[in-house]
Length: 327
Figure 1: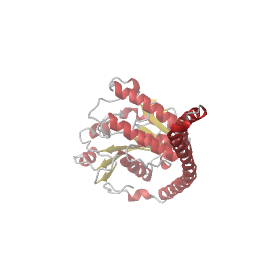
Figure 2 (figure 1 turned 60 degrees about the horizontal axis):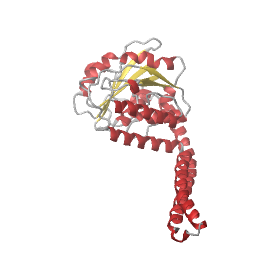
Figure 3 (figure 1 turned 45 degrees about the vertical axis):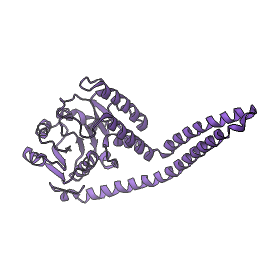
Figure 4 (figure 1 turned 180 degrees about the vertical axis):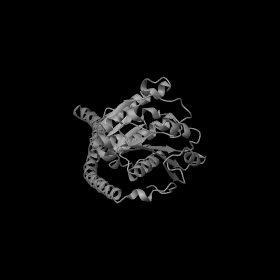
């Protein structure tokens, strides 16, 4: 049983040694623990520091590609290296490495495919009240969209079984956390949350510059991924909303019309009819998108088979310590 801990990094030369030192070298039920650093185009000494720390594997992007891309690269590389369990943690030392044994325990015992480290951020006083409120609301929305009860949906401290990792496909350019959960809910994976503590903050987030930007990008990601996996439902909801809005001016016109005062209210009828037609068109688009989604599912099944073939052929031999291309 091989465990690989992947650490996506961007300019983490100061905190990376602490993160690496905190990762347990021996864990009951695991034969070997290896560390993989994904250097996402750092402009500081992150790559050199990773080498000095003696990590087992380093993948280097010569340009910054973003967190989602680095996570995807790490996942693919860990699979090539023969990982049975993959743990993702951050390079800023937010998550405690000492909780890795507890994080992977549900996978070792066969109780879970994916395990999320629950920071209990909704009640964590180290976060400001706006962030705590957003965490509660965001997790509730993701739970609704994914059909999963996950109290900390945006936690990056998580573990994947090999099977779950093979079937995880990241298309978002912002963050992988929400997308992986919506995918997991769609594919009926067993998800477990494990409570963790949080290390003191070392820097502000580089994923977003402000809370409004984080909200906008998160909502955009959720809508896009939900529409991808539930197109008929997404477009039908939108279509019914438009139909409801359109019915209001139509009813207004009818009331005035039967009262003998409809002569000057024709605009309401036109606006209502346009909204109702747009609503019906949205439902039709949903039907077409739903049919297209079956082709996407077939593509995912094909990709899964291709990955399995590559892994059986020993693709790990092609992984270098300095790799400019995503594996």
